[in-house]
Amino acid sequence: MATPATMRITFCCSNTKPEPWLAGLQAALPQADIRLWQPGAPAADFGVVWAPPQQFFDEQTRLKGIFNIGAGVDALLTLRLPPNAVVVRLDDAGMAVQMAEYVCQAVIRHFRELDACALDMRAGQWTFRTPRQRADFPVGVMGLGVLGARVAQALSHFEFPVLGWSRTAKNHPGITCFHGPGQLTDFLRQSRVLVNLLPLTPDTVNILNRDNLSKLHSGGYVINVARGAHLVEADLLALIDSGRLSGATLDVFRTEPLPPDHPFWQHPGITLTPHTSARTLRADSIAQIAAKIMALQRGDSIAGVVDAARGY
Ligand code: NDP
Ligand code: OXD
Image 1 (tube, rainbow, N blue to C red):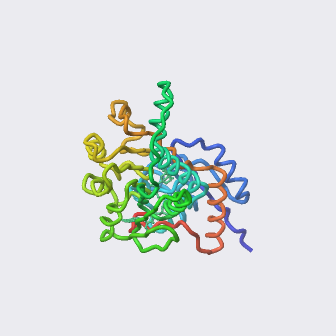
Image 2: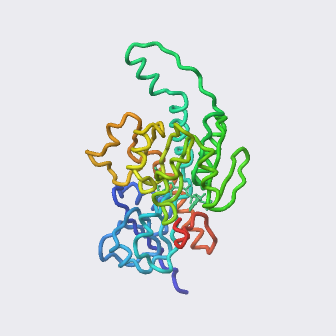
C-alpha cells in the first residue's frame, strides 16, 4: 500500500519573525513538513503568507490553499496567484474584539471630549463641559462583516444610535441597516461619526472622498481603520480645516509608515495610530489556519474563503 505523501506547508510572510510561527504551525500539524520559503524551494500544498513577492507564487504553482495572516487581502489579490488555490483570510482570530475596543474608545473619546478635557487638566484648569446627547451622535459603520458587525454591536451597547452599510442586505438587531450604492447617501446623511471597516476593492477605493464625507452631519467625525486608500487624504484635510468636519482618528494610511513630512502628523484635529487597531494574534491565527488546513484535507468546506472576483 502506498504511504500517503507528507503534506508540505511553506511560510512566506514579510515583516514577520518566522521562527515562532513555524514552531507553532509544526506543533499544531505535527505530521506536516513546514518550512520557511526560499527561492527554489520544493512545491508545497499550502502557503501561509503576508505580502509575499510575486516570485513566491510564480514558483509555488501547486498550492491548493493560500492562508493570508490578515483579514484584508487587497495586496494579495494584486499578485498573479495559482489558478486552483483557494485564498483564505483570517476570520476574526481575535481581531474583532480588538477592533471593537479601538473603535469604541475613539468614538467615546470624541463624544466625551476627552482630549480637550486632558488639555485643560494639563493647563491646570478644572473645567466642566456640558454633557452631549448620545442621540445627537449616530455612528455609521461602513462594512458589516466579521469586524464591522462586532464593532456595530459593541457601539450599540454604549447606547449610541448605530447604522450600518454593507453590499448585501443585513438584519442586525439594534442596528439600522442600509445596503448597496443606492442607500449610501441615506446612510451617510443620517450619520455623524463614520467608521470605515470596508475591504479595499475597486468599488471602495477612495470612498471616503469630499462628496461622501460632506453628506455626514455638520461637525462629523471620521474613523478609518480599514485601508489608507479608502480615504482621499486632501479631501479630509480640507473638510476639517474648513470646519465642515470636526476631526478624525486614523489607523491606516495610503503610505505606511506615514511619511515624516505628512500634514497628518501635526494636525490638532487628527489622532493617529500606526496600523495597530486589530493586530494579528499568532496563537489564535495558527489554531485557525491549522484547523482549516485539516478541514480542507478531509474535503470539508471552510469559512473565510475569498471571492477574488468580488475582491474580498
Ligand atoms: P469582511 O469581508 O468580513 O466584511 C466586509 C464587509 O464590507 C461586508 O459586510 C461587505 O458586505 C462589505 N462590503 C464589501 N464591499 C462593499 C461595497 N462595495 N459596498 C458596501 N459594502 C461592502 O471583512 P472584515 O470585517 O474581516 O475586515 C474588513 C477590513 O478591515 C479588511 O478588509 C481590512 O482591510 C481591514 N482590517 C484592518 C485592520 C487594522 O489593523 N487596521 C485589521 C484587520 C482588518 P457583505 O456583507 O454584503 O458582503
Ligand atoms: C489585516 C490588517 O488586514 O492587519 O488583518 O490590516
